[in-house]
Image (cartoon, helix red, strand yellow):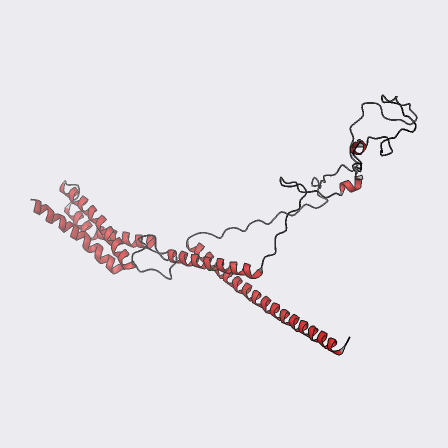
Length: 316
């Protein structure tokens, strides 16, 4: 081999070495990127789990119990848990059907055969040498077909079972192809993004109260106090009618109109806002606008009574 060929071979080996180093460096960088992506996804999933726990506690759902682990596999010495194989029992080979006659004894005379007598020089079919039937091998015109082999008892017990399926018997299941880590990480990232989106929607829904969720807090408070005041105004009309028939005196009617029913309406609105007007997740206590509620309730009830009086006088 000449010097030029040695030089070309050295250049080729050097190029292969550089290519191997570059491939190793690229694979190392790829592994570092995959590990960094896995750590980032782990942090995101941990934060999502904590946020979901907070949402569950806010809406009154306890953390689900941990799933029970798999039961331990029974050991070889466990009673009643012995493995069975499809082979014959350990007592021997393939069981045979019991003969109808007496068992064979050494030296006992045998019954004459019903077939033709043995003729010397006549061709005989190949057999097993013990006088048993040859099966398909003994049939005429089936040259090259041997007798069915029989496994010994030990080998029959150690024979592996085959999975029976409608498509084919004994066909092994196809091995799943190896998944690409980058593809799996991308799918996990998309699922994490989807979980974040649903989590944000859940937080927005949790920050809305059950009562009039699309209204502003001020409008909600005005509506609640006004509704309680209207209900108190209906009670005022009932008391006025009861006073007209003599069931309620004038002092009791005036006390309920000026103080009793407005106070009941105010505290009723306050309790309604605290029970159904508070979001499930909110920082601090939402405003209930107490001065506004006090003004509405203590003005609306007497105004309802005055309106009733004006209506009665107008009808007269």
